[in-house]
Image 1 (tube, rainbow, N blue to C red):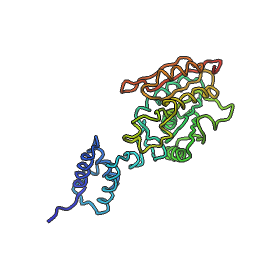
Image 2: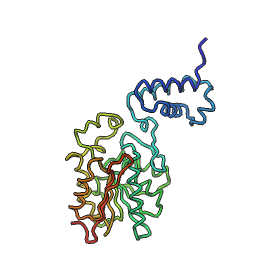
Image 3: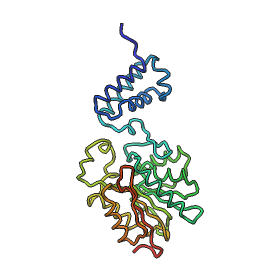
Image 4: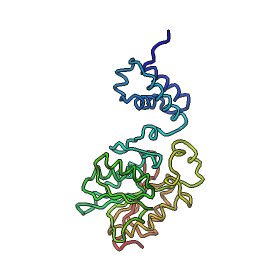
Length: 290
């Protein structure tokens, strides 16, 4: 007589299939996928592992496992990703928020703290899921938060995240600073723009295969959008305003040079947990951009 199918049996099968597919953390992802298929959290799965599994649950597990074994990102399969202290909805229209971008949030908070105004104005360019601006608004409720993105689908996701978190952010559709009014100025501008070169082999590997290339790739060996932001942000920065940018692990020197050419001062780069210069910031000279 065949043994009854239980949640533990499903979990063991998931772990084996993920391991055979080369997934680096098969145990963790098996629990996450089983939780998504059954609507139970890890504690419930442990406590009820011997409970019988329904055919519907087994079918859902199989579908989710096939998607993951094909390389689809866990964030897309689950429809969510943790970032900073937030749980964010994600979609294929946006970049999946990554831990290294939390370094940008950390230093943007320092810049906000340095502002003398009671309600600093903060702008996030290319907001995607809204991860950066929502993390900043969650930490500093007094800021006036604005974010832009050229993708309407990305903005829909960002607005949905803001609504779910109860955070007040103004979202604008358009490329970089284009949707702003001429006299709109901000104390802090942040961005995690596309910075991968067109021929970078990483684009054919891992999660990047499933993410929008327009949010990943930039011309001029990945520097084109960084240059555009640096050359135009000064028009919308208050005197002594901060510009903070995430960039590639080997682009800090080029970004610092572009900031210097654009008239920024107090230029410095910040190192991520992997030891790479990942964030670079500059202070707009009091007399404005060069």
